[in-house]
Image (cartoon, rainbow, N blue to C red; front, side, top):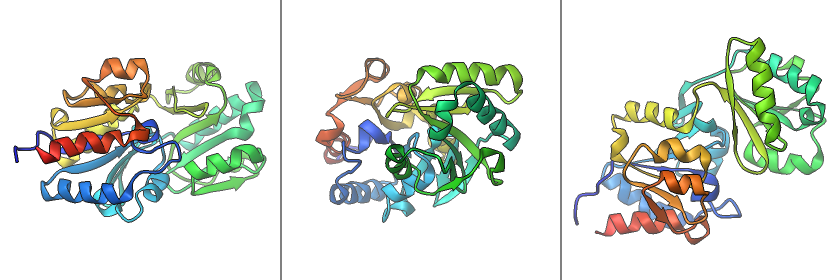
Length: 272
């Protein structure tokens, strides 16, 4: 067997690692993970999903999987948060006030991610609740964002057409010193994150912690919020179902997420 040319595997989740039912082949993953561990190779999930969702996704494997969660805002190693890039409570309240005043229809479908919990209003529509609570399993419903509990706030997510994200970010940045930027995260969701937060930056911090260089990883992604990490390495794969900009950023193409594309590529390296 030739030497495996990477020291860490980095995967996006939605559209990359999991299928359309939010599942992955756990038996096959167990076998591949064992091979990676035997070779001292780290496995990292880099996702817009919060750490609580990723912990559920990898239940049974959490001791052996690291997380770059909330699009790079939260880093989890050995099931412990080792770093979080966050908003102040004051900044979050300014943002929710803008949404309430200028985009009132978006307020009931707004979630605030914290390290401890995710927070939403009790007025969240029932048709949104099932999906949102799947992705944010530690969600607490409150009457008013003005009564937001103390936490470390890493992201504001709005289940609304993406075009309002730019407007909210612009209005917020005009009145607040803590800057924000918006990203689309699929399912018609907008993520508003602290300025400078993205998967690539979060991943670099995790790799530094693991003492792995960016060009020593193999990375898999499918969309725009994966571009930074795909551009970090010569071993980057965009899924066949990926967007054009992600395909342009990646060096290679992997089979689609519904065809176990990540596993198929990894097995080729592990079997050489």
